[in-house]
Length: 331
Image (spheres, one colour):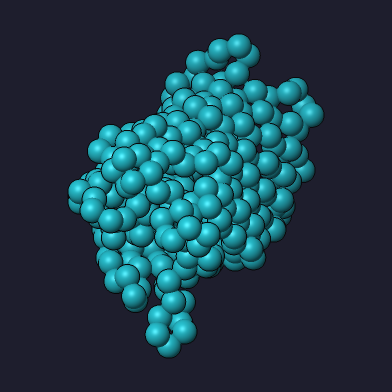
């Protein structure tokens, strides 16, 4: 669960550290609030009533691409990396609403990021906290489940600099409507998870980043205690940024599109389950930057690979079985 300036969102996240009030533009704007691929594997089914926890770590290793990507004197691309740890809770009180099971989620992410030469910045701290309300419907014995939710990233993260983007926190709210469809039967997890990021304006600069659409795909099979299969995701900006007088109305990126594919493997130990998955971004494109001379596109976005690992466990349940089968949660 994490972010909108690239590092957990990962790339653009760190780019924001070099923005200045005098002659730059909102480098945080081309990224995302939540790192693409973060909720791969999380299905639409709700768990039994209880309190669940998860610990997630991931690394994102990438470089900047696009017409505005800076290049070093030796021709090397600008590297961007992020190492992230997040702690989260999922609470299912046993309530039903409109035939659906209700649940709530809370997550706090921690980020250490860096952008290499010629930029050379290394922000680290607490990113914006995530909270969500979710409803999950089960359609009889068909194996189909549908989940709808509304998540919110609150501006609680570490903020520095004249535009509030000198570290890994964002000085704005992000609303995240979410829809998940899953087929869960005979060991299969076929899931499509679609969500949008809708940002309010930066409270300092009044720059407003455009909406970002995510689509994440899971096709895994569980055999015994093992789970494995292919995964993929798409993320793209679907509305334009709105600049402000703070940046002379310059725009960082108006559009970008990223496609990635990978694989997942997991093992259920009973009291806990562990999942590891990796993704490689196959295509990354960006356009619409207006901070440079007329006719010069200054847009840039990241392209790289990610490795995620997550530990899931039950903390408390009204009637916890002796050897619970712990579902996977993130978000």
